[in-house]
Image 1 (cartoon, rainbow, N blue to C red):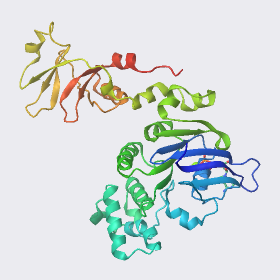
Image 2: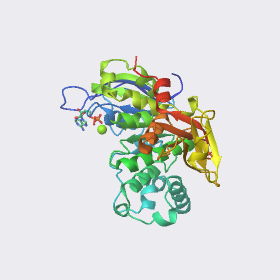
Image 3: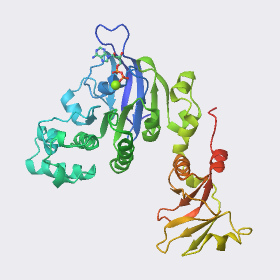
Length: 360
Ligand code: ADP
Ligand code: MG
């Protein structure tokens, strides 16, 4: 790959007193604007690799190139202004306010007060925290999710082209984590940074990565490819066992429900009852839906007696569709467009039939 934003060229790290190197001759190219996830078991060298990129750790041998420039011997302070860093435990300074935490690097760069203040407010907005409410708070006055957002804002403060994130959602409860992951992807769609993100969680890697570098011992690359390619065709037994038995269902997260052929649905507005539409079901579609005057889907009229209504957006994944069906205790989901208007239905069996199945 030419024009890689980050290039690791046979980089090794041998910690003093350790028998084996933590990172052995790692070569890896990371393209501009991509999220590359470093995935692998505990102790395989993910954090070491991340810190070799911004030279918090000096390599024993090899070279690190940033945007084509060899930075292996560049001034580390200068280098770190071009690279935002979000560490695992967020690492906000407890005695500094949110604004002072975020403004740390701009202040060391000598920005004047007004410019720092404006930047802090812009970043708080960007990460979904109301500036007037949050800028004067201290870290201990924030939830885990809010602290994590401030950590991201701080890493973005000097607008670096590159962000390194070490298990950024690791310490956060599962529900908040999913929301933060979604927000993070929305944010990246706007800012298009080159991001290297460390995780040991396969589901997170599949969700967030444009590419996944799956590491074995000593940061040896077992496979470096898109999540879809890794799930569909694991390179060897190590990769297959690491991604685990849930590969087929994880793969459904990558496939939109709207790419399936949809079954037609009869839509009735107002106060129809089940009996009235049940009568002509022989020639109508299998499913008939009652829609309120405001256009929102209400319930199934046909087949009669269906309690739950599973609704999924056409741009949501097949995994989301199965999840909605399970929650509604139905084997069919209603697919709606961005405005919430019904497009058709998709069945459990259609997803099973039309999706990739066993990795080859
Ligand atoms: P990961 O982030 O994938 O869990 P690390 O990069 O933290 O792995 O660690 C890789 C290996 O290097 C491990 O065997 C770890 O014990 C060792 N290691 C990490 N940091 C140090 C250090 N400062 N000194 C000595 N050994 C270290
Ligand atoms: Mg680590």
